[in-house]
Length: 471
Ligand code: FAD
Image (cartoon, helix red, strand yellow):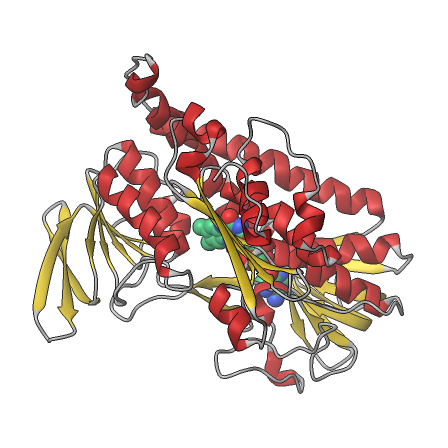
């Protein structure tokens, strides 16, 4: 690739090297498409560098310490200490390993990698602005493009991230010491995962949430299990409270919130984590140069093949809308590459799972009972509490349940809601069932290993089919 005024060409230009972009690039290269991937920061995007992987590394490390320190019922006595710097070093090592892995997977697949920011020069050309002094720019002409520019955290007015007092999730995952106290604004999945991590590290965590409960996209009985466990851990919740303002208070800060009734409350903490959602990144692209439609929320509009309002330009991952999840970005990246290659691929979100890595975890897929009713099904539901699971008892972790929703008439599995240990793993079985069009009897006839947590999925399915044995 020549740097300067020279224009080079590529069949497919992928902008952004996160889960959506790198998967689109690798899949396109597998399909013999000449593909160029441009990344302005770090391969692996938010997920590998500042999101899924760093947060799950912290979740695992703090879980190990917490479990070891709370296992007296099993006859185990320990008082583990977590060295925050050691934990961060370990997390950084994993991140480096995985981002290097993405880079070498792309190279081995034959993807041309370009470091810099890509912006539209026209509908067929992108200007690549190389960062760093005197690095200049180059132009790449493309036949097709995939936009995979991701998302960034929403800032509340007055709460600009400074990395010291007002933290984004990325800042919180880069702290090298444990704050004494942390005020978390937002009880969504990122706020809840990080609140659990820091509470387990010994921080006094307070959550203020504008809505009446945490994890608002989940059913009440699912989020209640997570909220109750967090309360047991010591997290202090304040609902119907909107963060308004903050001020420095010596080495700490005071955040002011307003309740629905207009009552003002003050919360003191060493740091404040703002986790109120994420918004799409399109301002890096100079979208004004092209006729690409966006939604009111700023997401790039796409059809069921990932195509934007320009036929030869696709958008995948967070920039293309909810759910903002890495595995949704993977799938959209694959589909976009296959459509560019002329294959009849299309997106289908029926079996899109989602997980929250709190204590305990949540794993869901497909429809809830009420969604199934709204969609015109006559749903039948089976539910297995984990206190009736032998394996959950041997883990001393019995809060939660597995619920399965199916269509009574056909027996087709329509959805599942799991809250409990390893829910993020267990839900995969139900995702496969939905994707395969499996019926309750198909899953019921599948032999599950004893004793495992996945037996609870089996039992819930058998319950829905009317022949549960163990519950
Ligand atoms: P991103 O990963 O954001 O990647 C976009 C890339 O594009 C970035 O690297 C950016 O530098 C680059 N870019 C932007 N503009 C340009 C440009 N003009 N030119 C060149 N490059 C550009 N999801 C899960 O599924 N499971 C989880 O457990 C999970 N945990 C999370 C925890 C946290 C704390 C956070 C913040 C997110 C988490 N997510 C999780 C969400 C997940 O990280 C995102 O859904 C995923 O990263 C989206 O992938 P993407 O490819 O769309 O965008």
